[in-house]
Image: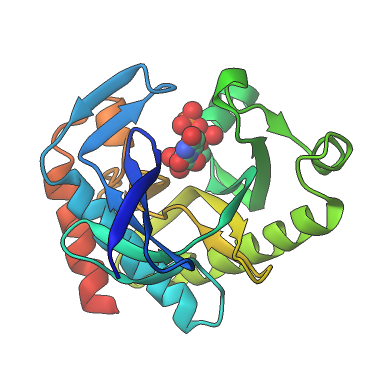
Length: 237
Ligand code: UDP
């Protein structure tokens, strides 16, 4: 299987077409961004670590019977993935308050939520990825009721599995973002990435942030922290 042309390129990943019509190769870049990509930096080794964590998590979800786009790792910072048509919706799952929910509701960061909170945003950078509900999604032709229900149900399963997995390595899963798409045969699969760039993780023993917030809020080196998270996950899986 050989890479052919670039299908798409964002700040943090490049998606390559291949000579196999069913698969792509996704390469994770060293770019890290924050605040709607206004703050940006290149941090050597970051792509290798987000790729590794995402591979471990997607592989774990596959092993638990959930369907993801992940097929296998490809070199240090690449993955062979099923080719998907991405649904333009982001599902956000929250177990404790952080980020935008803190700003929206004026509650202290870290506030426990009585139960997981699901949010949906419309994946559209020009509109700053607005929050939507299932009515918006269906009425505007973004995703049908059936599709949003399926994405939310799977996201809840992912949340349960990952809360348990991360708790076993002494890490609280505060919140995360997840995306979905369809493979050529019409199967809905988890796509994009699940990594410290797209989740918030707190070290249980000392409350230390182990995710992109370290970069967002200048909390120091991210490579050491991402590496520590990777090491713990590798031991657990
Ligand atoms: N998130 C993401 N990409 C985005 C927006 C959010 O991966 O474009 C993740 C973010 O890292 C966090 C969760 O989704 O784990 C919830 O983010 P939030 O709505 O709090 O937004 P933020 O604080 O980043 O503005």
